[in-house]
Image (cartoon, rainbow, N blue to C red):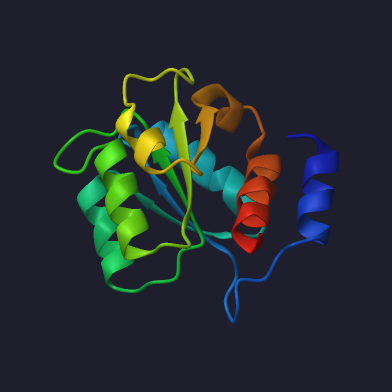
Length: 144
């Protein structure tokens, strides 16, 4: 991550009410979840990481604060990526959703069609230090 991204992100850290910005990271690969979570923590944000969509929905249903949800498009199980995005949005209409996939043409067309404002990024962008600019973009969209 460039030092400019880190400096800008920490100097302009948006406040999510009485708590710090909360990011929910959901992905089936532990290494990917850990890398993204570590980069988000470096920005000063709080992170909750889950490996299943059901766990992520539990976090949301319990009313725990979440400002941005980052979902791996390869998520499998009862609540896959598209279904999780739709369910999360119905539960939390203002939730910012980031869909991370291997390509922008992932074979998961349902989520972008039903959640047109979801940010779509490639996995490699999240793993190459672009998290700061992505979080700024997601949070700016939330305020707009």
